[in-house]
Image (cartoon, rainbow, N blue to C red):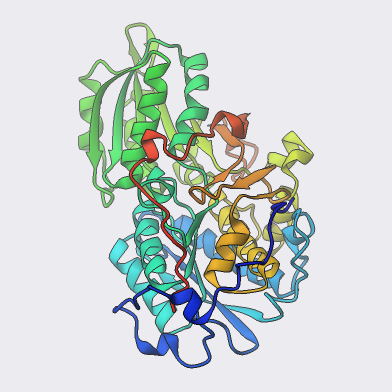
Length: 458
């Protein structure tokens, strides 16, 4: 359902009123604010509107980036009335009619973040300055997401974050112009810990290998705090470079420790490589003090499972969404099958959670603009604040105004022991209700940040 008290009063903030007291960022050229832009950055003036899709097309998260681009392209087709419409028919908001956005045909530009913050900012800046993008989305690294989100805040552009799991994105680095649909590290820890304790026991000793950037830090913190509350102890924590491809030197010391659980706070190609090395070192067959050694991957994806192959069997983790949700758990997850059907017809295989969240973010942006009647970032901000919706695959979902974080059910999964095909590598263990992973906006793991004010850029 839509936000019950939403009105357009105070939404259309243009011209001097919208820009009062806001300095023009010096990194943007004057052409961005050329005559006819109606008081906010890159306001569409013709019969088209441009969106910027900024994803890793190279680097350790390139597989996720490729699937994100597929989903973005599909979303644009559906917004423009092409294809079968996908989730437009299941979305609880009925504002979108497949006629573009506010009658303007949607076009898009793409960029390669390279999984590097500087490259991502440069790509996003080009989209805004040269291509006139009014919204930027994408990314599969939280370091990238935080950097691009800050840039969009300065420029007066909406950032609809793609795959970003670090608490920081809607925590200490939150911005009024930024919105996240994807779940976060805290939610993974809260959903996983009870299941890990039930399956592996309360008396466990964990060894963490952690990607050396903000996502790794917050994921380790979330999993550590949740599992230690269940009785686990942490025997060691070692940071690993994001550029690492061979993790043998990091796995070997695990054998010399007292650990009986290895937690891989790695994602994408990093996880595939570190898990492969762990199996090669015999950790899956190891016993410690009479306990079977276990490996945990806090943030999972079907794409990673495909890359890891048989090594993923039996390993627990969490996901934002899974393409089998509606078939296995029913109408609560309406929209899943519609999206899977559209994506599968176009590309020949089921979508990943990276594809899903990017598709959904594109629809949510278009819907917010349509309900508000304006592309003004402050109109979008108000339209998404405390917006409740359904029918986009995750069940009832809230976009919380306090931090621009979506709250919804979290999927706990495990690698299948006997997969039926190359796309059916993950089984759903449990779905944790949203209320069990919801936290206060000032929770210690999210402290230190402030949304600030929406910036329309003019």
